[in-house]
Amino acid sequence: MDENQNFKSGYVSIIGASNVGKSTLLNTILGQKIAIVTPKPQTTRNQIRGIVTTDAHQIVFVDTPGLMNPKYRLQSEMVKTAYGALGDADVVLFVIDITRRNPEIEDEILKRLKRVKSTTILVLNKVDLVAKPTLLPIFEDYSQKFEFAHMIPISALTADGVPLLLEQIETYLPLGPRYFPEDQLSDLPERFFIAETVREKIMLMTQREIPYACAVVIEEFEKRQTKKSDEIIYIRAVVYAERQTQKQIIIGKGGKVAKRVGELARIDIEKFLDARVFLEIYVTVKTDWRKDARQLKELGGFADM
Ligand SMILES: Nc1nc2c(ncn2[C@@H]2O[C@H](COP(=O)(O)OP(=O)(O)OP(=O)(O)O)[C@@H](O)[C@H]2O)c(=O)[nH]1
Image (tube, rainbow, N blue to C red; front, side, top):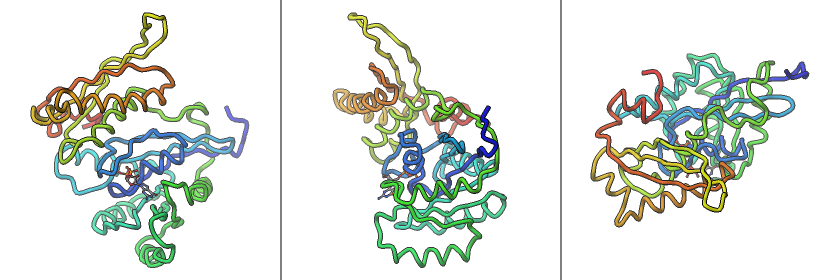
């Protein structure tokens, strides 16, 4: 137990439209990449929890899927997951991209926020891309729309404004215990991060619907000895596509695309696990998995449906 009587702890949900920089912010706060980031919208599918512990506090950050108007079942589940993170939060960070406003989604989020009691901070992200005076009309606009505890401009990419944001968050945390060991960075298993890393590389290397039609499952994760008695971690990642044509694109001519995905993912996974890795990627088809409740549970990691 912590001897510090003033120790604070709590949950902070990061919410916002797609592509505003929520995962980038979580990674910057943690000082380590735990959430995958791509320039494509709807990269994050699940709630990703990152934990920050200092002598004074422990904050569990919950990164959520970007909010959108859902078009298929996977997207409806992503939206449900994101709004689900609002109810339990001590503090909500509502992140907007100041270079690309999305009034329809933003208004919908504000409506939801009015129904929950959490303290909400408006985070104006990507200030590195604009001149400061352009922020004034956004401040004015938002102070009329909602009673935010604070409005803080930041750059999740350069970390500008992020220390100030953390200071403000701490003031709103309740007194409470340390829920997780101090060196724990997330409550999600290693396999989840490995699967996400493979999915990130596929998203980066493919276009159109392919990035969204893929799910990745780690079927084997095992320490093995090489002939020279060195230790290596053997990982077998299975990539599920929705159709045969998508499978062929992910594999590429002569296996080129899948090979590159494997090479790039292995570099990140070795860093993440701090170990040597042998990564095998196997691509297969599960027809229309995004529309099927049971398969969404298995492949998308959506638990209670
Ligand atoms: N210039 C700039 N780019 C940023 C900043 N924050 C994020 N980005 C970029 O914006 C894109 C989207 O970032 P993500 O962190 O994946 O956004 P997200 O809100 O988690 O996206 P979803 O998973 O779709 O919800 C990436 O290309 C980031 O590099 C920032 O502060 N400045």
